Image (cartoon, rainbow, N blue to C red; front, side, top):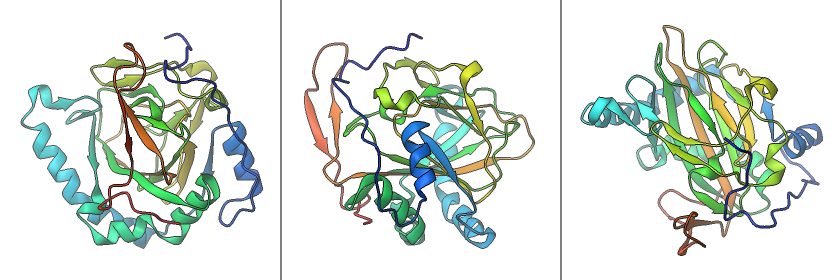
Length: 268
């Protein structure tokens, strides 16, 4: 694909983070601003990850049940032979709700999003053994166009994430241009990306890969016998809106404030 801008991306300007920081370091903030990502190491211990995995199981089972009833067992980016994606765990588990507003994640959200940050989205992504499809290059803001365009993604490794089982790869520095044009494919949205220039980001269980919604990223297939487990938690500034409409036709037809009281609660 061409490296062209999204039709709704007008005069975007990246603003660097100046601090003071409560949870991340100045070096991590610099990497976030200039590379579009950093790894927050050893954020969660094995006991917490075991509990998190247990609390996410009901969503994983619901996703499997849903996919068993659709053609070819696939729906966009999720599939029985690719990865199981289960959103809105905070609606099923008070423990996960508390986890998403715990001191580590809320602290990162405060340092990146500002003094008033709200949970925007969360989902488990369990990449199946010997999966047959990768996750294509995309920006999170390419799935739903949010303004402000840059919000925060915390990609939590519930198990070790390696090149062999489907860890993340990112395109460093591209985020500073804002949202790129995306194309719809049978396995999800796709934007420009260059594997030759990409940075591979393995993560140990308990690490958080922290990146912008504007950082193009992709994941390899899982070529191992085990499930690669991740929990993705996203935060946006209070007042963030999703723009709805067809970018190919014209301007957004409406803007939806992201303030669902049940699942988009303020964390700081």
